[in-house]
Image 1 (cartoon, rainbow, N blue to C red):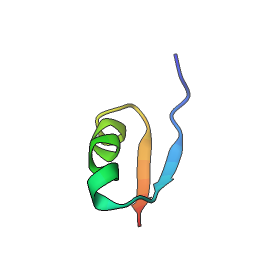
Image 2: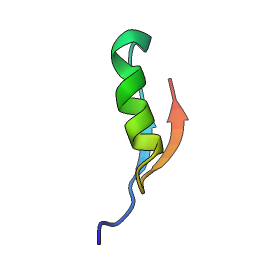
Image 3: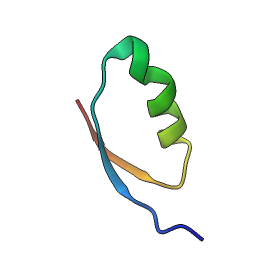
Length: 34
């Protein structure tokens, strides 16, 4: 079992959208998006 991470995510829209979606659907906590 993986300990969930608190993630602050930053990225450009075209590149980041797929990666952000994967993080949101994972067990990790996305706490901020820039």
